[in-house]
Every structure is written in C-alpha cells, then in structure tokens.
Amino acid sequence: MSSSDAQDPHAPGTSKKEDPASQVGSSQDAAPPTLTLAQRMAERRAKLKELNRRRNEARQLNHAEVVDEDRRNKEPKNMEAR
Image (cartoon, rainbow, N blue to C red):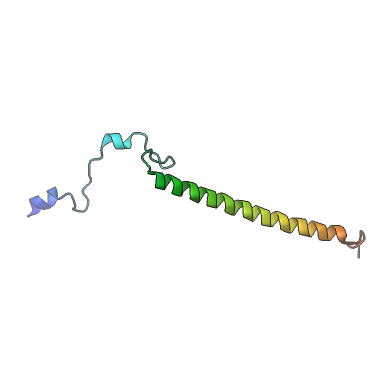
C-alpha cells in the first residue's frame, strides 16, 4: 500500500510537473490573452467603477473646500483679529 501512496498524484507533498509553455510570459500583472469577452468587459466595468469612485471622492473634497473658502471670503476682513 505504501507504493501506491507514493505514486498517488493527489497525495499531500507531491508536486505536479508544470508545462514549460504555461510559464512563458506568465506575470501576475498582465491578464492572460485568452480572456473571454465577458471577463474583459467585467474587468473594464470594475476599472471604470473604481475611477468613478475616485472622481466622486475628489469632487466631494473639492466642493467642501470651495464651500469653506466661500465662507471665509464672506467673513469680515478683521474676523481673524477678533
């Protein structure tokens, strides 16, 4: 039984031999060239959603600064001295 355990591909500690062609050009940053249309569209939607979130956050911060600046401009010039 021990000889069958040593040859069992599902046994813990055994490693599969990887195809050398699968290692060529593999990078974690680059998407595999064989993505389906649905996968590419999903990635684009996710990227667009993130960009829209960032733009909205920047817009809100800018608006808050504009409101604060407008409030300061409406105050009397000697308001800080008081």
